[in-house]
Image 1 (tube, one colour):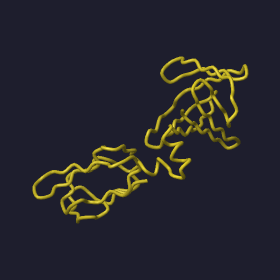
Image 2: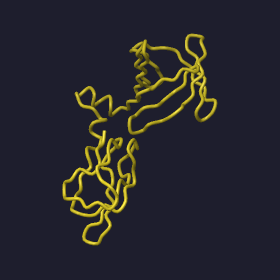
Image 3: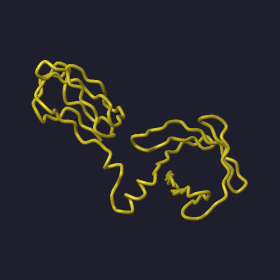
Length: 167
């Protein structure tokens, strides 16, 4: 099961895909989706046709930006785990997000691999820190977006110093 939430200035829709049924706001509907290309689809609902194009995919935010009949909208995707955690009062997004990145040891910043606004996933190299004549690649422990970079290349840092701020 996948759950999709579409919001615009006037409406909000929750779409659930369960087995062979499609539900919009918990109401079963008849819908036909035809794939035109990798990013273009033709959707028929209630004898009305819609042209849908995927403009951008943001895996870290679990968002897809679509053009529906020329109007741009953002769609939020929830998988089975997201729905289950939501029912339990938790958020999967907050569990997978990385907090601020701190220096694990004193050292010298050799290189910064990301920039402000970059979307990172678990395992993405963030920076290279030299400590005791060894180069250490500091990688992301989860998903997030780089909010601020508090260091510069060539800067000496202390243990537990905040290097990158994430959101």
